[in-house]
Length: 197
Image 1 (cartoon, one colour):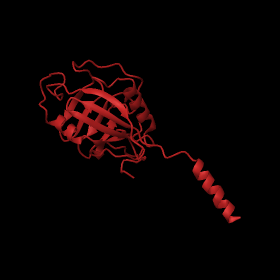
Image 2: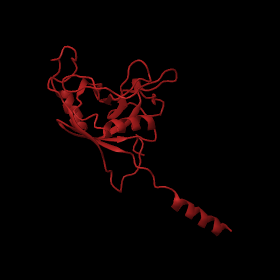
Image 3: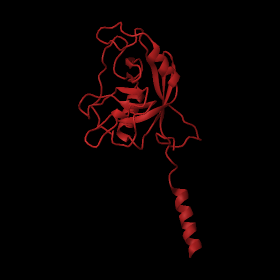
Image 4: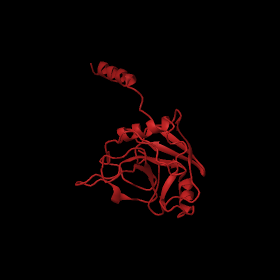
């Protein structure tokens, strides 16, 4: 009887779907490539939204328009001449997903309305845990992390800023996302959370 139970258990395990891989996106920029892992399990709405923008080509030609050393690098909304691109509807805030705004993570930019995020995102340059959700208020939703290319992000930070009166934190020479695309993670990739577990 026990042997039959284990055989059934083994058969059930063999029919389970393989562990889903976290999606990866490659941002080809003027300064090099930034590779991102997205946390689809922890932030499903945000990841789907980001991938929709990626797959549609929305991010191609977008610049990093807000650089705050020791804080964040932000992009996802403006063309090189600071024309704001038309976005889809805002998404629900997923900042209560247990992920923290640590160095190298990506979060959604938004207004004071927690549920106002659309296409803009930022990369944390340091541990910005003050941006995390608190019991009494929403934070900024972490949905991915840079797994390769933080040196490119740091190079962006070093570029001169202040030329544009309306956008003083933008680099003087626009730094574009030339192409954003999903990339194959390979057969050896496994799903991981923000702690790499």
